[in-house]
Image (cartoon, rainbow, N blue to C red; front, side, top):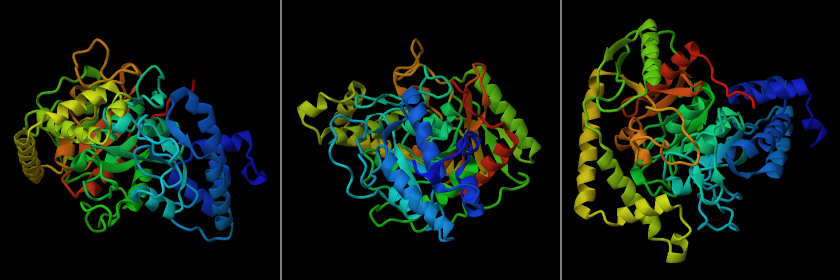
Length: 475
């Protein structure tokens, strides 16, 4: 470690608690340097990652070299971009030049670091962010927990016996421990929001098309990329960089017109909020229901017009599963028999089920998806926001796809609040809203109309200012 990177014990404690927005302000004031922040971040990854297994790759030497260059720019008063010197992580499903992208799979090439950046990696790097590593995902991001045959089990920093959720579970665990300040997740059925709920962090699945994806996800138009952070403010900072066009994604729209960093409002007067504890068909744990009820009272105190109402659709799980399994089957077609034998058995099973889906079934699912999207569009003519629990259950034992001994057969069964809004492509965020009876985080799910991500973010920011910050206990 260079002399520039050396810090005292007290300074290290302060650095460990900085968010991205705070770090940038500290750089401007000369209170600390990127070299100090990155060195501190890497030392804490070395200390904490063996406990939680959040990282598939740590870019230690490269990150330190980038930090030295960033420190020099700040000292000269010439930062190269709006994130210069901020430590970030990228999910293992996302191409990052010079780093391995293993997809959590033993079928990937261990000796082939990516030759190019995916759009989000490029945007962050061009903004001056320093990529400190890649975070764990289940194989090909196929499920709502995070373990894979290549890297093993990712664990929840609140209790390492438990799962952090998935598929962006590595990012969730890293965010909760502040191992990096900005974390990229992806979400095709809840994969940002599930781990945010289970780890006490914030994340948003933005409107489909705001953040470009390349190469395209096997799950196609179900998949959204977005931020996972310890604060709404830092997610807004990250979205400002992620929500821009890239010609490699044919689904991406023009530059997003949203002011992601607009000041949070002082009140919610005039905002029409629909609150549903169960969507009309979900079994929800009593303590989680109470958490949402308390949040509803807070929304009313802030001036929102609150109505207890379900959005009125039946569980679209068969529609989701048809599209999900069909996407998984596309991965299988690229692998020979010896490679298929190396796969997570659960992924292999759903991929094989996907090969049996007929064209008629697939088109029917597309039609049902369109009907659900239209129904939610009409619903949001009456309500500015839909609020539900993010998860109906608490974090459960790591290494299992469903809670042991519970009523669920597949991971989709225990995340019924998330996947409907991948079908509709709406913005949806998970905001920490307190602890359950076991002392574990709970998430509040905020769903807005398509293209109204700013509405979701502003309500989340105001609620966050009235809710306690959640920090995992130290071991």
